[in-house]
Length: 112
Image 1: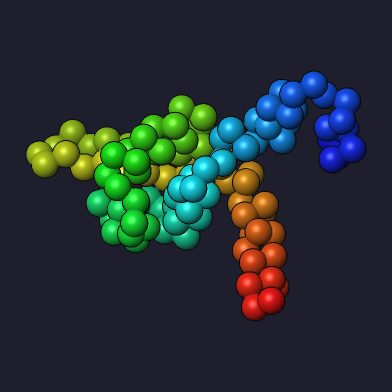
Image 2: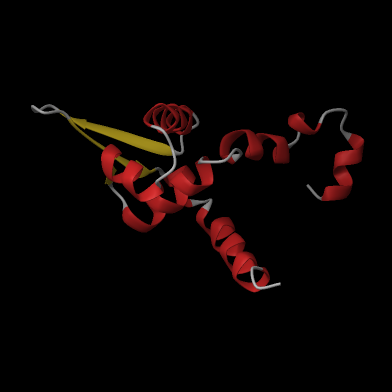
């Protein structure tokens, strides 16, 4: 689907682009995916520390949404204290070329 095809749809959210944005849109989701792509698996507190400004509640809710959308895998180990690790699913790995292109775009345009 091209950008020109959007004019034929009544609602952008009903397009493949709308679906993609519902899965990866927002302030934190792409950062979480980027972090996991570089360092998986990652434990919750390590992720919080590496992202920085995100609250525990927001990180938790973003991870739950990404898990529900099939982007993030959550693995819980039955031990005390509880250990939970997050990693990317195969579906998320298909996003990585797009993420690489965004990084290249940022590199080319951040000095302008």
